[in-house]
Image (tube, rainbow, N blue to C red; front, side, top):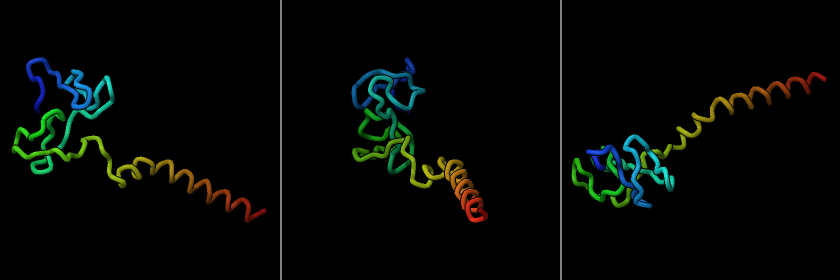
Length: 97
């Protein structure tokens, strides 16, 4: 993984602040520190324009932490199930009385 390997730090691509390599978001501005290469799918530091693994230009990139719609929906599934059960219960109660 690219960054400053001798100190375990990586530079933010937005504000240029130095962060611990283990972080995914910048401590200063909250920007994403890593990207995923479109070609080889390797994770690398955002401040680099070219993937260090394959050399692909990743100017138009995808952030590591972006969720798909299905992932967001799945994360909210317990809440949705609760509301569906509550709605069914209320419907049942009001149709009896």
